[in-house]
Image 1: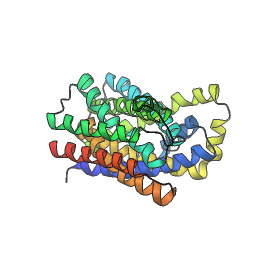
Image 2: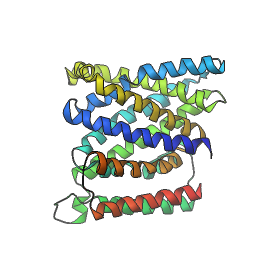
Image 3: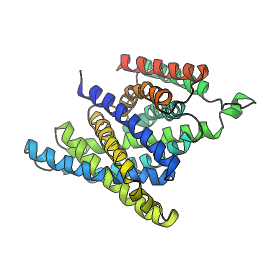
Length: 300
């Protein structure tokens, strides 16, 4: 099995765990931005320990970073910050499984963004799969209890948050793939851990002054929540390591497509952990999006 496939499945698993912890933190203790900062802050120590340990274990020298690395890394990092804040807000609108599924429109949007920015062409079979995924989003777009025309339901807060988070996750995916490709090393794991560590650092540096200015008290709250937040940082680091490793090997659109296996993990979390109900309509939407994953994997 190819490295990018293993890395993507592992990333999807750890990302589901991370969102579970983040949902608990955002609901009970922290704001959406505060919980977003927590994931980066508590992932920092582990990320740098991983870099040092990997360099020591392999005996490799620290790789050279092209000037464009910083621009791509910052673009991807800010995109991920915005996407994470939006998806945490989304959790307050719909149940856990549907929230993750709407966020997964990142696959559709990454395909377009990757074509425009990186020139990564998707074959006709891939676009067919994207169409199937869009049908799944339409099924998931009806807000429970809402009455009215379908086009109005598409403008609901839940759908808009889901689509916006998907867009910014697409920005982060394309930015991260571009950043990893500028690291001068033939070792995909080294490129991944170095990119992860520097991007994570940039994200923390961006969020500290923002929280101090706009949400005073949240930095202290992040520290007070450390007994739970440390697990957020650990799962975040492991998930990000998987994504970054996959990005070094494959197009961002394909990585996110395979990453839709997260839907299965999130559905299990929704039912077994959060004790939430999933309707037949929502299951139908999830099934269509899952079918789109299968088609995309077959055409890669």
